Length: 441
Image 1: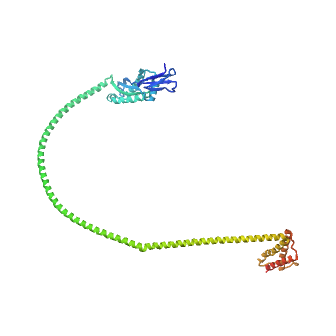
Image 2: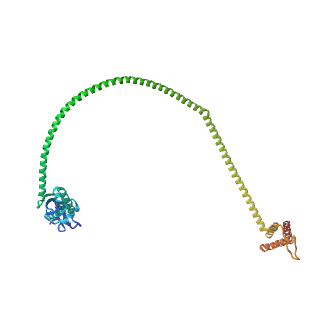
């Protein structure tokens, strides 16, 4: 086998399997390239197959055996891939006769099954219903094999017991009965038609007489109608005259009303002009002066506002200048105090013990005042003394002097300056005595 293309007609499908194909490739009606030895190509026919399905002596629902011959056309469906794959799985490698045999057996089984569920009368009289049931049931099974049922019809129905012949005889008797009944009905219809013809002749005669009477009546009615129309036209003419006169009077009244409307409209316009004049007068005498007064007051208020703002700015400037002056004074005072402190420090460095002594002597009266301050706040003092001690104010003064003496001793220990010269002690004692006297008072 040489490699090349394999071609098939539209009634054949190619099935290629082997290398490069995980599943067989199916080509209905076309061509395919095939490699020899490693690939295999098979054919399956897509032609329509005609099957004759004979079901002999099948018992129906009533237990009557009959034989039915059906004709079915089936084919393998090549346009549906799933059905073609199913057909390849079922029939690939089989001949057409083998495929037809399998389809025929399937159809015959369904045909026999449906015959068993129906009566002879249903199969015989309603062949279309029987064919439809066989077609639908068989199609559902054959589809799974990849076969489509194109058509199915009943070709012949027969029985060996004469059941169908009996049904035919009954039908024949019925037809004969219907023929006799038809003949009798025909004779009856003939007599009826003769009576109807006579009746129609008499009716035509009477109709002619009625038509003559109707003509006379119509003449009289039309004449009366014409007379009535004449009288009506006269009455309409008289009524039209009266109506036209009333319309004329109504038109005159409408014209008069239009004149009154025009007069009232003009009066309204005059009133509107008067209102406009008064509004303009009011605007000239009241509104404009009021607006001028409002403008004047607004300008005055704006001037007052500017004055207040200027005064506030001037006051702020004065405060700022005052602050600068105070700051300058504080700066000058601080410089003077600093200069004084510097000079005092220079004096302390120059005189040393004498300067310290002077500071201490200046501080002793303050110390005496602080010591005597609690006593000055006492309303009553009770003092207890022994037989040899002082009593009264002398006792209190002595206690204060003793505190001051101890203070000078403590200062000597802290500073190294001895407060004991006659001139310094006399001055200190005089100042302390003065403070104690004020405290005693």
